[in-house]
Structure formats: C-alpha cells, structure tokens
Length: 144
Image 1 (cartoon, rainbow, N blue to C red):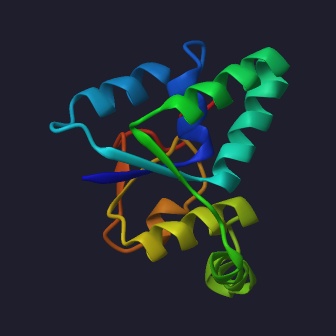
Image 2: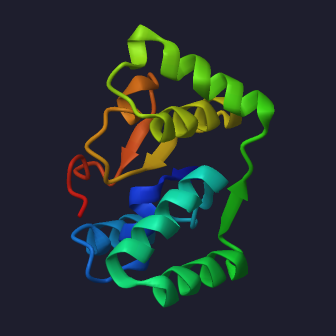
C-alpha cells in the first residue's frame, strides 16, 4: 500500500501536541505491512512553514532532518507538468473550494495512481478523487 501524506498529516505525525497526532500514529501502526509514504515538496514546504509558525525554526529544521533521513517517506518533486496539472485543477470550477496546495496534492495523487491519503485538513480535496480513501477515516477537520 502507498499512502499520500499531505502537510496537515506531516504536522500531525511530527508534533505530539497536534490534535491529530495520536490518530495519525495509530492509523499508520494499524496498517500491515507498513505502507510506503509519499508527499510532495509543496506539502513539505507547507508543513515546514506550519511547524516554524507553531514551534519556531529549530522545530522546522528538526522536521526537515527527520524527513530527509526517513526511509519510509518519499518526497516527490512537483515538476512543470505536475504544476500545470495542479494549475488546471485550480482553475476548474469543480475545484473552486480547493486552494492551490490542495490542487497540487490532488494532481500528485492522480499522477501517482494512489488510492489512500492521510490528511487532517477540512478541505474536501481527498473527496475530489473518486475512490480515494482518507486515513484516518475520522480525520476530516481534526487538524490544529
């Protein structure tokens, strides 16, 4: 199994003080075998900015070092084609409720053919992909 990890999930996993931390960790622990985790450099940038805003630069630097050293998490880079796909989604009336970061995640999930995504965002980006399963199932709007 491969699971897309968005910025809200990266923050939930990394920050024990985050409202979604326990649910995020338990959700991944229940998956056997452990899934391959995938994020994008855009989601990582959002998570690093969020960590910096909440806990300061040292916490953001620690998050980056942890992700760089992780064997479980792969960071996919948003290339010009993926950026264009995200922009086309953003410009679409069907995605009017999504911000550009959400559209980038959605475009990545589609391009990578993923069926699972971990998010704690209240945004409906996960539901925009037919058949995409949200992890944890009760995570909608549970972010901090």
